[in-house]
Length: 315
Length: 259
Image (tube, rainbow over all chains, first blue to last red; front, side, top):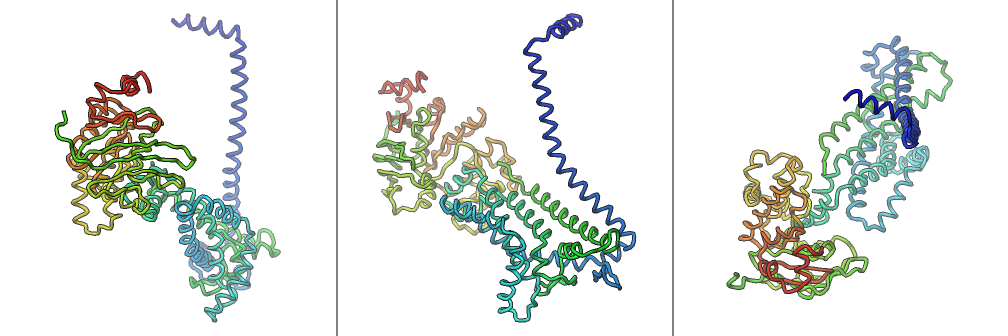
C-alpha cells in the first residue's frame, strides 16, 4: 500500500503536468495577495498599539511626579501655574457634561429621524434627505464651533440672561446637531436591514405603520441602533473644536451646562498650541489627559459592545 | 362526498390585479371560499396563487402602485374588502395570515402571541394571558413552551416557530386564515404537525392555503383550485380535481407532466 502511493507520488513529482505548474503559480499569487491584505489590516492594529504605547510611555513620566491619588481626587487642574494642581476631574466633568448635552439632543432627534426615514418617508423623500444629512457630516467642526459661539449662545442668552459667553450648553447643543446625521444614518441602515417579512408579519396582524415601526422594526434593529449611539458617544467625547471655541478654556469642576468649562480635548488643543518644552510636566500632562480620554472612549465602547451582544437579534 | 353545500365565507368576483410595474398578475379570477373548509391553491411558480392569497388581507397595499380591480366579498356582511373605503387594517383584523418562512418578532414567545391583542389595545393582563394560552393550545405548542413563555421566540425550532406564527394569527379569533406555503421551509415531521393542525383549525375558521406540494393539497384540503398564468383554470372539490380533472392542463400538472 505504502510503496504504491509512494510510487504514485514519485511519478507525479517527476513529470509535473502543466496543470499542476499552473496551480503552483496560482497558489503563490494567492499567498501574496493574502499577505498584502493582512498587512493592510495589521497597519490599523499597529497604529492603535503605537498610539497607546506612546500615551502610556509619556504618561509614565507624568505619573512619576503626580500621584494617582492627586490625579483623580484633586479638584483643580492647573499644571501650567506656579502653584500647580493636577486633578483631571474638572476636565472629565467638562467632557461628560458637554457630551451629555450633545447626546440629549442627538439621540432623540437622530432616532426619530432614522425611524422616519426608514419606515415613513417615501422613496423620493429618502433619496433627497439622506444625502443632505450626510452632507452635514462634511461641515468642518470649527464652523460648528463658531456657529455655537456667535449664533446659538446669543440666542440662548435671550432665554437665560445670566448665561456666560462661553458655556457648555451651547457647545453641547451644537455638538448634538452635528452628531444627528451619524445616528440617523447608522440607525436607518440598521432598520432598513430588518427583513420585509417581519414587517409584513406585523401588518398582517392588523398593526398600523407606527405600531410596526415602534414595536417590531425598532426592537429588531436595536443592536444597530445601539451601535449608532456608541459611535455618537465616541464622537462627542472626542470632539475638540466646538468645545474649544464655544465652551471656554477654564478647567472648572462642574456638571452645570450653564457654566463654561474646559474639556479634555479643549485642554489638549490649548496646551499643544503653546510652546511647552519637550519632556516638561506640562507637556507630559497632555498625554495623561489623552490617556484618560482614550480610557473614557474605550469604556463606552466596551459598554456598547456588551449591550449590543445582550440585545443581538438574529433573523 | 360533500352532501350539503356549505356556507359561503368569501368569494372573489372578476378579480384582476396589477403590480406597480403594470404586470397583470390575476385575470378575472372567480372563486368561492366555503366556511370551515380548507381551500388549496395549486399551480406552477409565478401562476399568481400567492398574489391571489395576498389580495385577501390587502397585503399588496404595503407596496405603492399596486392595483386591484373587481371584488372580494366577505359573508355574511357582504363587504367588498377591496373597496377604497374599507380600511385594510380592519380587513387584516378579520383575516390573518401565516407566511412561507416563519417570521416571529424579536420578542418573547408570550409577546409574539400577544402582539395582535396589543395592537388592538387590549390592556387587561388576565385577558391577554388567557388568550395567549388558548392560542398556544390551539396551535399545539402549549405543552412545549408553557414553562418558557418569556424566552426569545428565535430560540424555538423552525417547526415550533411556524406553530408560534399560527398561534399569533389565532390569538385574535380571525374568521379566515391565509397560509402561504406554510411548510415549504420545514422538515417532514414539522410539516405533518402543521397539516394536522390545519385540519383541526377548520372547525373554528376558514382556511385558504397556497401549496407547491400536491400531496399536501390532496391530504388537507376540501377544495382545490388550479391556477395558471394568473387565471383560475379549474376549481372543484379536492377528490374530483385529483381523480377526475375536467381539463387536460390540470391533469398534466397534477400528474407531474408539467410544472
